[in-house]
Amino acid sequence: MIQVRNVSKRYGRHQALDDISFEVKKGDILGFLGPNGAGKSTTMNIITGYISCDSGEVLIDGKNILEDPKAAKSRMGYLPEIPPLYNDMTVEKYLEFMFRLKRIRLPMEEHISKILDDLNLSDVSERIIGHLSKGYRQRVGLAQALLGDPPVLILDEPSVGLDPAQIIEMRNLIRKLGENHTVILSSHVLTEIQAVCDKIVMINNGKIAANGKIDLLMGTGKGTKIIRLVAEGREQGILSALKSIDGIIKITSLGESERGCYEFRIESRKDIRRAISRAFSRTDIAIMLMQPAGHSLEDIYLELISGKQG
Ligand code: ADP
Ligand code: MG
Image 1 (spheres, rainbow, N blue to C red):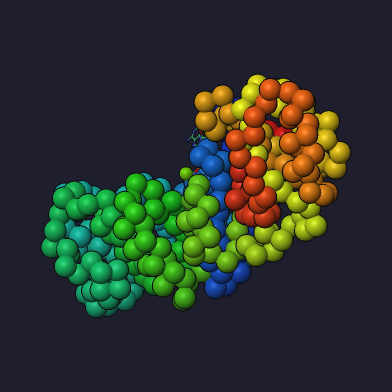
Image 2 (spheres, rainbow, N blue to C red):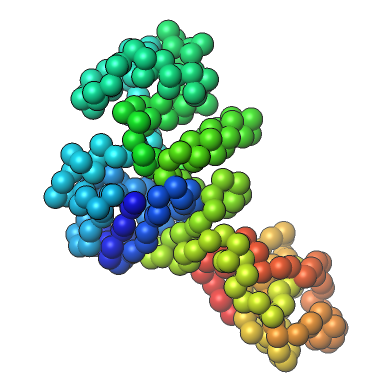
């Protein structure tokens, strides 16, 4: 349904996207996960045709977004990071305005009232957008994306700035929409993505860092053991004590987690907990926490965004 092929984009000297490719199949709810500045919004703006790429191509249902923008855009609803709302319009007037702007050929009143209904917005349809809470405004942005019944929805961080109750509400809405739409949902919060998506593309520094089904990604590195360690001492001292231990595959520094304490993620071929205690007993390093951890998606993501590997 969506093909992103070898897309690159520069802003001046900054390479925002570096040769990224991925595919979204019909009916998928794809999570597009990456820390702030990773390139998520840039990618979504390119997919929806709001900005062009320097090289590569994007196909929506086989239509090239640059060569056939009208056909490609009519298949997509887009909720940008900052929704294009007119704060002095009522919800209903705004949706009518956008309906006309998009030149949609459906019975307008019926169509808009169905969307208002589906998104639980009917009660506020006469209210001025600028007077609504952030949660409602975000839903109005989503309503705008649903105009014209597009089969594909591109949602850029729809939960940012919402309170916990609104986040759950937005999550449920996206889940429901996912039943009959192909969805790309971006977020810098892993739990957000895990809650609704079945596939995931991780992006970091403009490059794809992981891509696949969530359950398969979690299975990577089978047979290895992972420990989360918090130790008190100098970071370099802790690292060199750890490096003397046999069987370690990789040490990832996760930074200072409490004052004077550093957190590490250690991947090894065997149980090295006793060896760690012994190695530290010869120093003044204290173990504050040592916990076996699965190879969870969170580990992969933490490792990815920390970017530091020992
Ligand atoms: P994300 O949505 O993942 O937070 P963005 O796609 O917004 O990331 O940004 C990716 C990188 O490109 C960031 O380093 C950002 O500062 C930079 N960037 C984004 N938009 C522009 C722009 N219009 N001009 C210059 N740099 C930009
Ligand atoms: Mg963004």
